[in-house]
Image (cartoon, rainbow, N blue to C red; front, side):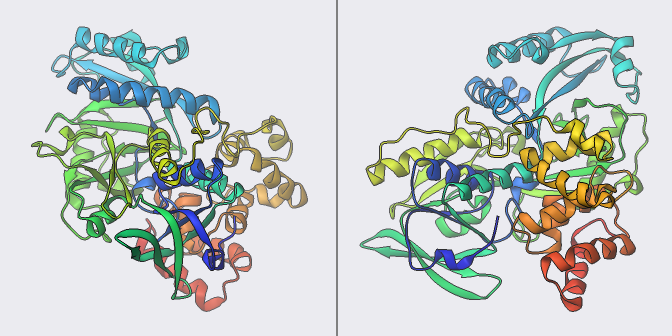
Length: 516
């Protein structure tokens, strides 16, 4: 992956996609596979907003059964199964526990009925994805950190997990490999219209501070909450916050109900840490400065501590992040009651706007976008992405080769999940220099070989691109100054950074991440 702003110049595209999150990535990939000349511009880094601030789940949305949104659940579950098969390196099964207490809002019989319906809506997904009931003793044995006072038993059911930022990156790379021009740190400044129809845009290279006219027969806006300012589309903005805490010692997640307001939240294992989230509150603040507030942390810790015997407090928080969702407009009293479904709006000037949606179902929704674009272009090519193997899907087993090179089992597993077939190239670098198999941080499964590959091959511009989205060290570890400088010392030659640039990047990362 190489960033090249000049590729946008002196060309006419069939489609210009504005926004490099999950919807922009899938739209570009789908359109490029259908033979369209595609350009994608993203004002920041790939997945730098909502698409890297999710719960890292590919799931049907069990809680939506309460609102009888069966169509949304069925759609998401079908996508979940397809992604598990098409991208086993990118999307993997994750079991969830649901405890039942004496005072639980939903009792055993009602929960069993809901999980049975969830399995039914998932179709033929196999016994491994079905729900199971456990006695009090057996359930607490699976989750030994769980508070057992009033515990009656519990269930487990299956969904799936991913690394959201790397999911976006792989799809962007797939678009590039099929001819799309994809440029990060490139902002759409204004639309160009002719006879009332959008025929292109003025885009700004945020690195070179130059502008370029991009001609395009069709334009799609997938910028999420930023599109509100451009289009005037009525959306409901809600903020979601996640906390990163130490590992709980199990590889299964928990779905829990907040005692204070009845909201569903998750406790999820992720990269050897525990992810807790999310909050769901209406947001009217600065779109470019969405932060984790003290009350967000207090809420999540209090709700988690109702159920866990870990006794976590604010000092235990390793990292945190916040993101905004641009939902379809709703006057529901609670943000959690607002629909997570998606819709496509087409403005009078012909620009397509993607509104709402979910990480899980973004591929199918994007196919609808490209269908509309193709219809307007007079092109009749069906969607090619359903069931298509992902661009980095491994074709050979690499685990044994990795361990023969001295990479520990945990690092080897995550290396393949993160890079798929491209992990073979990283293994070759370790064969040449065995020290590249060393971990960057002792208790996290990331090697120096992984770090250098990302810096060299994955369109990294800034240090936080590398340490937040390519390898999420900024939220998984409290990086001290010496560790941060050691990392920069290794990547600066690859990135072409001089001493002054390195210092600027370090300073910016201190402001963003969980640095000490």
